[in-house]
Length: 160
Image 1: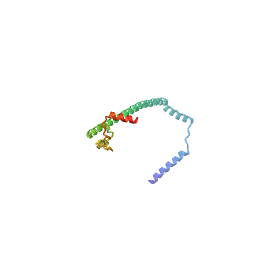
Image 2 (image 1 turned 120 degrees about the vertical axis):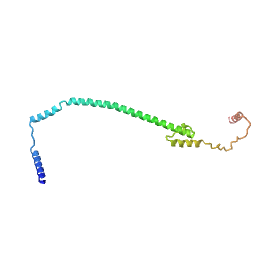
Image 3 (image 1 turned 90 degrees about the vertical axis):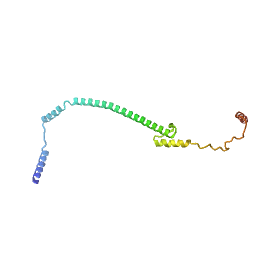
Image 4 (image 1 turned 30 degrees about the horizontal axis):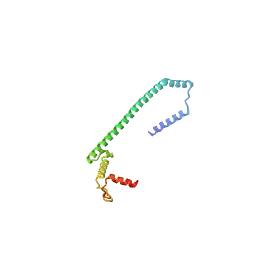
């Protein structure tokens, strides 16, 4: 069995060597006949080329319209998403403002935690700290019985 395989391989090798050694030659008529067949096969090439170009133009034109519509739809979708997001944030701010008792316009956070923290800070800031300390205790200097008009007139006469 191995000898049969070797024999077939040897035969194939010998036939390949023979083919390489004897190049095939063509006459001018053979070449003309081969060329004529190929030309006949592609005789309507220019027509097909024109049709293909028109088809490509139509595909590009429709693709452009499709791309324009897609881009417009994407833009509108992004705008809609932004509006929905803004409405959700405003609604959340209103809820936090109502729960904490602060004006919603003062809440600027974009999450519930941020708004609640800001509301708590506003509440803390708004707590009364008592009256500010005044060096003289808040008592008017020189208990004058004169009216404000008379006091201003005196001051004006002294300083002018």
